Image (cartoon, helix red, strand yellow):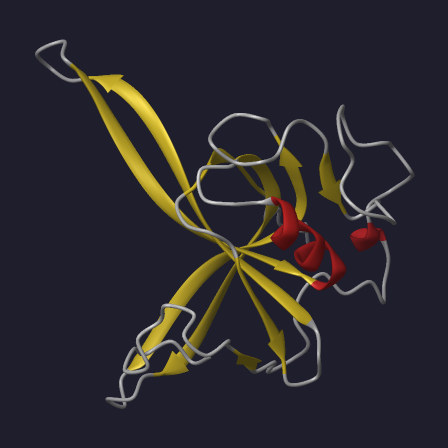
Length: 173
């Protein structure tokens, strides 16, 4: 049986400042809201814009490093995979959320953010590069068994108090 392909590539701007949280086990989780906009001509040949919003998750030290240099308006390129999970809301209804589990994040230098070129990807051992493309240091970490690209199973994320989230929402962290 053939393997499937789950790959996402997005280029856009952050719609809010990144939110860094930690799991109960102490692993860092960075949540990003990325806006992608495409232009098209409608039937009357009038240019229209359509913006889609994406939830991006960056795990571990990459998330911690990116939280220090990204801000609302930063232009980034994200490469990763889609992950859909379910949870039970406070009203007892089963809900679903789909996120992009980021493997590579490149700072494209546009927008109002502090980034400019360079990026952070699975192969980087240190902080994000100041400029230029990422250095090719071999295959990505997901190339073999035992290289976890996401959260530990059933990871519960604890947020920071006053992080701007409504305590009555249905998000399970």
